[in-house]
Structures are given as structure tokens and as C-alpha cells.
Length: 75
View 1 (tube, helix red, strand yellow):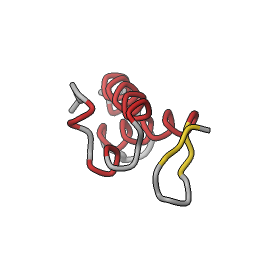
View 2 (cartoon, one colour; view 1 turned 60 degrees about the vertical axis):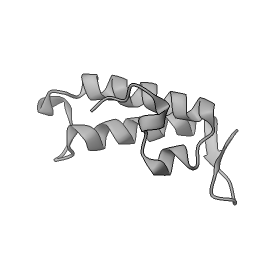
View 3 (spheres, one colour; view 1 turned 180 degrees about the vertical axis):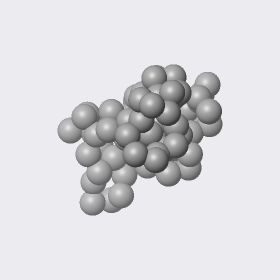
């Protein structure tokens, strides 16, 4: 299901990503949710939700890296 607000994101995202990274995650997730609605567009047996989360994390990783403190910081 798409997210309307960053406050709806999973705890693992909200607790460790700064606000800007959360916005990136939400937008990438929502876009992937729409893009991969058709099972034929997905590789393997991943669900629509699993694919959307993978895409969202990939988008975050372009600008952010996980620090030694367990939180994500801008590169």
C-alpha cells in the first residue's frame, strides 16, 4: 500500500533515516508500488510490497550511507 505521509513508514525507516531520506523512501516506494503492480514486471517471486521496499532502499542508498551509530547519514 502506498504511503501518504512519512509518519506512516515502517519503524525501521522512521527511526533511522533523517527526514529528507524518509521523503526519498516514501516517493520511491510509492512509485515502485505503481510501477510493479503487474506481477510480470517483477523478477522472481517477490511480492509487490517487497519490490517496492527494495526500490525505496536503493533510492535512499544513492544519497545516504549507514553510519557506525546505526543511523543513516548523507554521503
